[in-house]
Length: 269
Image 1: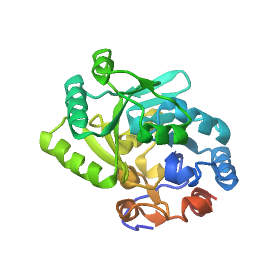
Image 2: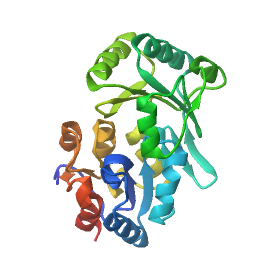
Image 3: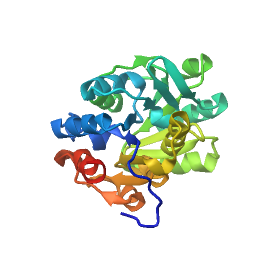
Image 4: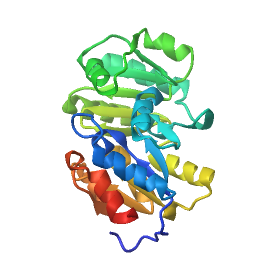
C-alpha cells in the first residue's frame, strides 16, 4: 500500500467497477465477491456500483448483490439512489454531433446512451457483443435524430484496438469538449467533462458527508485510474491494465479468483 496517502479507517464507502472487476470473465458474480460485499455493507460501508454500463444493465447485478446503495452509471455521468437523481451530466449536443459524424466517416461502431435508451445506427458484431455482456438490446435509429431529441450521457466507440487507437487520435486532434477514456482495448468512451469516476467518487463523498480518505475503489482498466488515485485506498485487479496497476495502492488477485473479496478481506475484515 502507498504509505504517502492519508487513509481514514474504518473505510465508509466502497466504489466497485463491474466488468473485469466484480464479475469474472464469464460475466458472472462469484459467490465469494457477493459474500464479501454483503459483509462490508453489514459493517456500515456504503456500496456503490460505479460502471460505464447504463443503469438498467447495473440493476440486475445490484439485485444479485442484495445490498442497498447508490448506482453510478455511464462512468459517473448519472448517479442515482432509489428514485433520487444525485448527479446528471450530458455531453454537449454539438460535441455529440461531431463525434457521430467522425465515427460514421471512420467506420466506427458507435452506441448512443441516454438514460435507459440505447441507440445504434445499425446492429453489428460489436453491438451484438455488448448485448451479450449486458443483456440489453439497442434500438436501431439514425443517431442524428437521437441527438436532436436530447444530449447523450455517453457515446461508446467500438472496434479493433488499432482502429480505436487511430480514432482516439482523430478525436483528440478535434479538441472535443469531452473526456476520452479507454474501458477496454476495443472500447473508447466519450464522456462529459468533469463526470468521470473520480468525480463520481467525490460527488458521493459530498452526498454522504465523507472524506475521500474514507473510501476504497476497485477497478481494472484505464477508465478506473482517476478513481483509484482519488480514493483513500485504490485497488487494481490482477487482470488490470498497466495504467490501472500503476495508479493503484494494492493489487488484488484477478477477477477469476475473487479479487474483490480478497481486497475487502485485506482492508475491511
